[in-house]
View 1 (cartoon, rainbow, N blue to C red):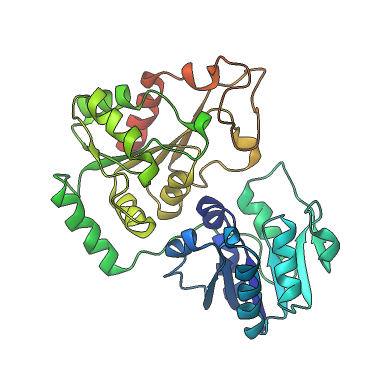
View 2 (tube, rainbow, N blue to C red; view 1 turned 90 degrees about the vertical axis):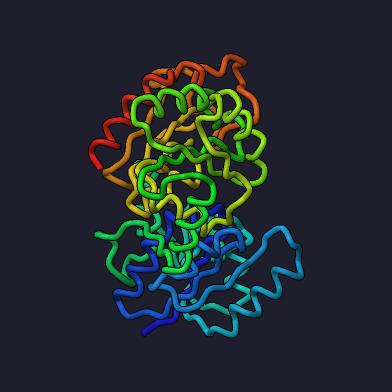
Length: 333
């Protein structure tokens, strides 16, 4: 049995996409150490395929880097799978004294790797991540998973009920995103349409930064939705999403949380495209996008402003289009 560190300190959505690595390695008998950013820790906390979790705040400077390297060194890992392509992730494995370091051949830190694998842009990010396991464990048959503990599930029910939401019949909207151009602008219209068609309660989930956006949606939809933004941590948000009939979100973490939990999800893609490999990894999903635009994709993440100043990638996706896809998935479930 090898002791293997998986270094993935990107955003929570990226960590979710990388979780099949944990299960694959564990199935082959390896001891699994996950190195992730603190924000993503709740999504891995109860993962039964992870033996040890080390959190690393990349924004906390050199001291945090050295502290994390020291913690990782104490684990005596013989191999590191470096999922993120940044040089700092490669340096973390080096400073931790890990002898075998495996990463992508296009990574900034590739000169520090002992083994490299191709970065295949034509496949889903899950499959790209699994390529790192080649020769160590199976690379097929795994999907992203999030584990919710019983207490969090019970807390989610009480929280929903305290906010006048039916825990057995509600839909989640996640209208926020770190990247401004990833935010579809018609959620308020969709709230009214969904409520009229299904009668389901509608919960708006998001971070504290999304609270104002969600409040605007509540007002514009004439109070047809309940604003929960900023009131839940990531684990409680996941527990709520697990109980929802459907999630409607942008190209962002809630999309991947829903897919990992088996909750049907509609993902709205604007400046980004599915060929980047970040569509929801689920059969119970639909992606809505304005195909055929000359300007898509405009960047890997989506800029703060539309470079072409027309924002057609989002403005030309109608609420009726999203509604149709949503009703299909609600009925399917």
